[in-house]
Length: 290
Image (cartoon, rainbow, N blue to C red; front, side, top):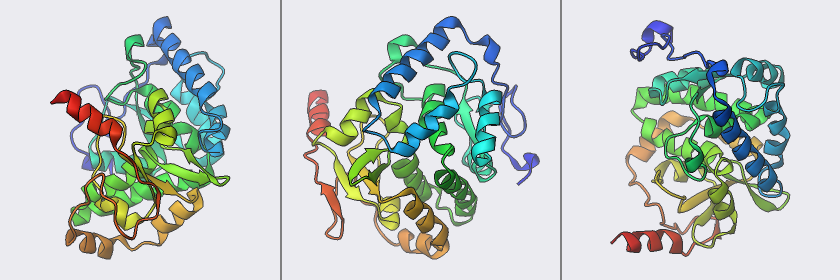
């Protein structure tokens, strides 16, 4: 795919939807919000997050204070795994997103949440995109998985299966758990960038925690508006990459097209269940809204 193949970008963006980060334009308050979020998560995550994430946090400790400068960050990351971070004006079309990932370019929003939004923000900001995603891009195996996902995303468009593949991204890159040292740890960016969900995902009896199965994940619905009701647990980053590279997705998409979607809280007889959740959190929220 070339730049001319991309959907028309918004005004001010390049043909590939990238924009300047304009690091010098961030205010002291915006840098202070980043520092507050960074310090809070960095203190809480050890012992809860995959050790590979903690190792990767070093790439965010750059020479400038506050929000990372993408140019400097990309220089450090490129030496580690050949990845770079590029700024975009917000959510981008699927083909744009996949093309960047396939070429080891991670797209990140440039805005940061307000101080009163420290605990929750529905739209991903620079803290979610950079703190949540970039540390694991410094890990060679996970970096390869992200590139493989981008390449697979481009192929999925030929089969009209983007919505199936999106579930794989959701339940791994965004909200994945991993077995590490005989215990469950978090690694998904949507969890590690959220103080509340970093605790909820491991400690709360409410959600299901189920062993990862590629086809099962791609059939399972998810929610975007609150803590997850379902988490899938991989055995290792190596096994996740291996399954992704060795699976022939064309017949898998054909098979999945004939099967019904799985509801979020449904447990299947063949599932490897670590926790069958009470769903008390989600049920309580629903009842309160009625």
